[in-house]
Image (cartoon, rainbow over all chains, first blue to last red):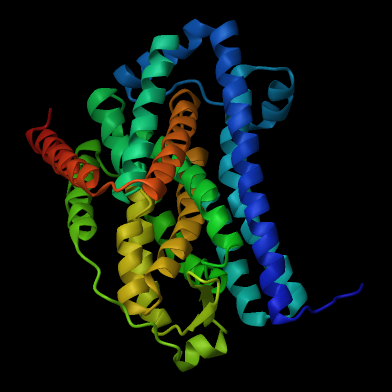
Length: 135
Length: 276
């Protein structure tokens, strides 16, 4: 496997070109998904939306939770709730994926300190998912 | 449905716009907006706000990164601290009673108003870094008005990181970007030029809020029906607000929004204390 170490100026350029692309792509993709999901919900199941909001206002919690195992299939079938959840996930996960991108970048650069720092952030994010599961 | 979703969207657009103009971020306004006007429980409002903070950060920071204002290495070094704090804060938000969260939110709003009203003095750009910052190659340069690169140094990374843990905690606990506190860490403690600090913080806020949002998402505290229009609205409002900010003198408007912030903080604090 070739591992080309780039100069500091090139390092800067690679990060400055790719990072905004990743960030903008995530906002654009998620915005489209959220608009499509909301429009679909308004057309297909408008009562569902109002009932959910009312339930949150009165009971303090949305009883309808997305099943993670069927999320992709539900979204592809055009289920509005699943499309909206995918939109929110894209928004949340892609900036975090940016950390993954920089981890591999620094690993390739053999920059030990920043490889460790970005790996720690990635590990912490996994801990975050686990904290939510047990919390 | 259109009335309900339209109402949440309008609220979110207003929060994003006011957040951008006041420099406090949309999260500071959308959480009280949803709880006081929309009667949405605060933990659901915080979950939705965290996702909108990620969206605003991603949208706003892209140009700063491209143009060389953001210090990516400083951001990545400090993200360990902010993400740790965000995870603690988001976990605490799942345990604390809504009334306690509302009281903490009111206190945070008052502190934000103070930091926002504080004037920044003339800053001397330092070109030297301390040994740790030198070893991590944190020093960089930013483009001045003529496009010429101005080099600057970085110091006291551990001191900045300590404040960043607290800022991250605030972000995860209350669903805000906590940018005002982060500016203190970078500007006053680490000696970064103010515009570099702002750009770098804008960039870091996304990962910090994203970490908090992950905890809320996996705990089931993110409601898609609330978070979706909130994310869209706050992003749109912030986009318009930042454009207005570039082309108009908004000093008077900023003062009006700061007064509004104080009123909301008093209302929220009173509500929490009186147990309504």
